[in-house]
Image (tube, helix red, strand yellow):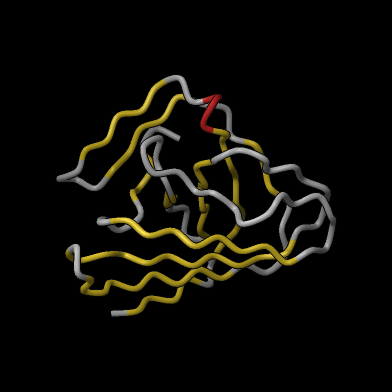
Length: 128
């Protein structure tokens, strides 16, 4: 199963150090976070989510690609908030398994990508 998500309205991020509260409901597949979300100014963005059977069990592989419209310094692990055009919000990462970019991003117009593997589908954010 591979799902393409191309209705991304915006991407926000929270550095792990700014998260004051995290509550995950693994049954409902939701997450509640108390943090300050920063807007990542991006152009066209795409995300694919694929469930695959691995040696350690079933894994969801999420790939996000976008382009920066302004300078941004992402030098520590983050959680990403993916805001969709249908007003749904997906969260990529959590405090125990954050998103870590392969490089520090400073240049406007630069293509960025994040790959995240987890045992669960990205959570839905509640109380945003």
